[in-house]
Each structure stands twice: as C-alpha cells, then as structure tokens.
Image (cartoon, rainbow, N blue to C red; front, side, top):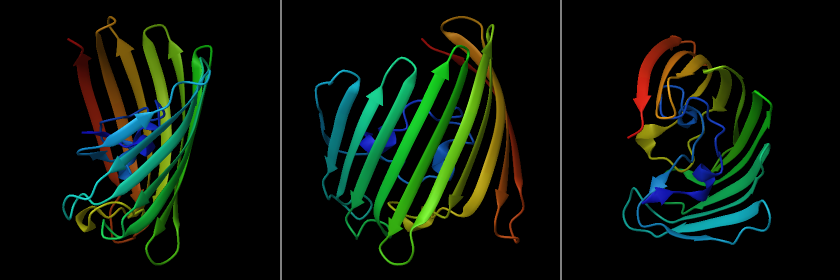
Length: 208
C-alpha cells in the first residue's frame, strides 16, 4: 500500500497537508493504492524517476500507471508527473501534474498545476500557489487553490466540484518533536446554490 508517484510528486508543496485544506479537496489523483508495484531509479545527482503500476483487482481499484520525474535540491524542488487510468476506473482517462517550490532564507514559495482529461468531454484544470515565512519558532503561511471539478481517477461518490479555497495559518514549534498549529480556511463554490464554508482548526502534534 503506497502513494502513487503522482501523489508523491507534490513533495512538500501542501502547507496544510492532512487537515481541512489538503489539496485533495481540489486536485484529483491523491491516491494511496493497494498492491502497488513500484520502481525508483538511482539518483542522477538531484534527479530521480519514480514509476508504479497498480493492477486491476476490483471495481474501486482498476489499473493505474503512474510515473514522475523529480528534481530535489537544497533550495529548489520540481516535479512532472502523469497518471493513466483504465477507463473502468471512475470516469477519467489521465492526469498531468507539475509542481515547483523554492526556498530562500526564511521564505518559501510554491506552485502546482494539474490538468485532468476525462473519458469524454473537455479537460479540467486545477492550480495552487502558496507562500510561507519563518520567524523564530513560528511559521506563517498562506495557500490558495482552485479546481474546476476534477473527477478523473475517483469514484462517482467523490466527484470534485468547481470551487476555490484560501487558507491562512501559523505553526509554532515547541521542540523538534512537538508543535502546534492554527489554521483558517475559506471555501467558495462556483455553484450559487452552495454556501461558502469557513473552517477553523487548532491542534498539537507530537512525534513519538
């Protein structure tokens, strides 16, 4: 059981990973699949290719072919990834994702773009940008993401909708193992019949 290379290719882009504003709200392809057959090439300097094949097993986990080229240096991270789906999986054909992040001193910026090609109809786009600055034990961050209903590679019950989310947050480190976070997220739907959603989260993380 492992993340597909396309999911892995985001690196550390997502500043709000695993909480309300995780990029999976707007980006299809955030898949952690069963029985993944994967191969990672040796590193050529700072560059590496990661590939994986997920065999067909049941209606919720048909064939996926995923490949990513990743460049990871001290300051710059860049990746290009592609997923190809069996047509019986969800309602999609393929995903193409490009990710880039850059760190300079106590600052960092990032961008992520993805195009989803459904089995029928026009392709849809999703994009995200973020920025953070570190000050002492605090990390202040902002992230914006927008998706045009990417329903590729997901089951019918999980179709994405046209929407955007802006997130503000601050992390505070107490030690190398213990930190806390405060985050505020505002999601706006393109569908006028759906209300905007505000989410406020606070938490503490301790790594054993």
